[in-house]
Length: 312
Image (tube, rainbow, N blue to C red; front, side):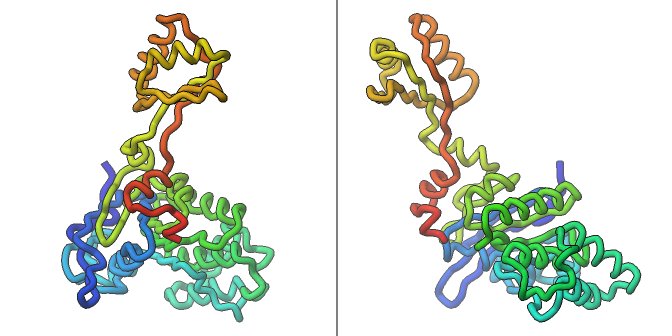
């Protein structure tokens, strides 16, 4: 079993009368991608601020890389990297100078620093633009440079706050690929995102935060399986076959025009086998057979009462 890179118990935070975090529990295994989802105002940024020692909690315990975030802030900061929602690059400096600045701030020796800068420029495909001012970079290049700067100190835990907001689809997929590579190297990634597809693609585990509480937690597949709406879709070649199948499954929904039948199912192998056996028993065969499960949009809407768009 993997050790916890981040462990949070009973985390509470209020600003005056407004309770922002109302006793949340999180556990992030080392070497995994953990995604925190939630509508605006749910408490995502406050959670990240507490975990990264930028803010003190009012209650609960927070352990990051085995260190108490309240009493061992220096040790926590030495173990983490943080990439915020907006790229924190100096636009007057070149890409290489931005990275060199981070090396200088880290107190690294000049020989090692040069090697680190060269390796990061290579890794993030920024070698050709290394001598250009960051102000000339595209949004995707800026985000890559920002993440490269975060990696200068070789942190084992990285907090990514909406790392692909505003990027075009190609740049977003490049960032996804870099994030996956980091985790393959053993880094732990704590990701907040407004893109449910991003959480679905990347996260090993997801927690959904709403009004300061964790309303669901699990793998993307576990969360989707909790939702009603999973069904098997059968398409038949004629109306008589559709009639026969509809009589076999009274809880199903039919579409005469498309000659399809939607049969509620948990999508498990046992229930699928039983469904197909029943059709076979009555000599009914479908032309097409597919399983449909709710996506994270459905999960999000059911849990928070808001669509993804409302959360952006």
